[in-house]
Length: 233
Image 1 (spheres, rainbow, N blue to C red):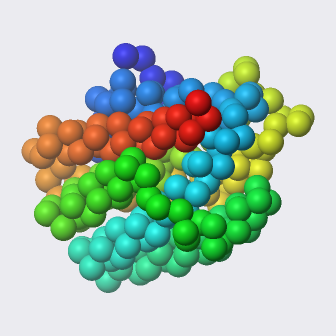
Image 2 (image 1 turned 45 degrees about the vertical axis):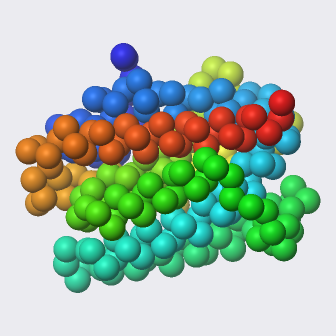
């Protein structure tokens, strides 16, 4: 399957991230250009679908912070520990911003906390934690990368697509947040970290197993989008 080129700075040519992205082309494209994403791009996504996504994304982020904390425990060096600590701090800040963003959609924090986790949220978050608990730091970072890097690529795809609607798009703030330089720097750093770990932790020899993990994470991401869409039916 033909994929658009990886955005500039999203890993090195021949590095682990780009190898995984290209080998998982079908799963990656189904995730990054899911109908939910296309609805964000042209503003046609039903608001009920977006609200469902917002609530579940809040619950997802709680576990994503925990998974990154596990990555700090498994970090291979003091420098890597500092890097992961900064990521965790950023995610906690993102959760604060997420609560404010949800408030603009009529969802207060008590409503977010009272909502039960969807089956898709449970499946994705527990799978990521299992990869971290049963594997090493590379297994865990491969499981985390489709979320961190994928959201950055999704925003850039939306920005470049002919169907992109700006005026009157209710999802403009969401798109701008992930297309902005702050998040793009985070996505580039995550791809670069995956490349470094691929070199230091035998990524070439382990590629088939790592690819299976990357593909599964992309499938779980696509299922998360679909969960949002299903709420509008």
